[in-house]
Length: 72
Image (cartoon, rainbow, N blue to C red; front, side, top):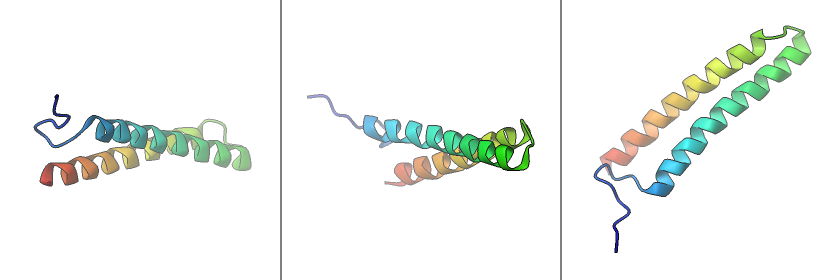
């Protein structure tokens, strides 16, 4: 039987969850940026800021989850 754990202590489903976390943060940031753009009539600014914030928050959450998994 194949052991699902890697040396880092992350399983396949953990990695899928990390990918979903990153994608979710970027998508939520983009949608919020679109809503701001529609409300403020500021075409690409809200989407770009939303994407930037989403990527930043996704990266921070990713690092925190990986660090927690490595401690275990």
